[in-house]
Length: 267
Image (cartoon, rainbow, N blue to C red):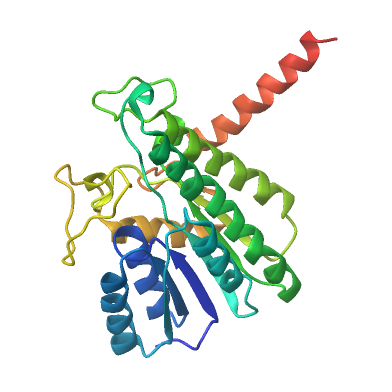
């Protein structure tokens, strides 16, 4: 095992990308703080990581849509040992917007936007003070699918909107922090072989055994591989499976062109 690197806090750690990422970080010598709603899943993962890597593992059973739980996790994220924050927790709330339950809509916004932002705000100042740190916010390729109709894509107005926020927030924060020692990334996976689509997010998938939704998708280890490789090369926007970064560069160029043309038109 590698030399201890500090502590990584991982939300949405009970399955999927979060569990795989936590395992990879622990194998590289990171102690971990695992955050999710499912206590038994967290206990299983913590036991495995302690046994296979010898690292220290803490578990926080928390629903990040609940203010008290979020405040408790934010206090831990502000700890002076936190060197890596993976904001992976997210729920989808898929369905027609006009029929979306207000309670579920609020939950999607609280977890995907408010909690992610609050935890980043809790962790970043200490990272800056210590002169090192990594922030990875998990978005989705659906952040780039606003104009596309549903079928075969899901009905996703709120979910897609929240992930668009994550992309813009992370890119803007990365620009603000350019020149500091911090590494900042937004990870935008496409369809991934996880449980994510087996629940709308109002309740977690109940079974203790891991499972994958029927549509398959990219293996989670490949998503983690892509993220870690992009961190090494300093890429802010990581889209697993995208071999050529030209489309991401073209997006930034199109944004600049829009702003420039609008300024000219307003003169």
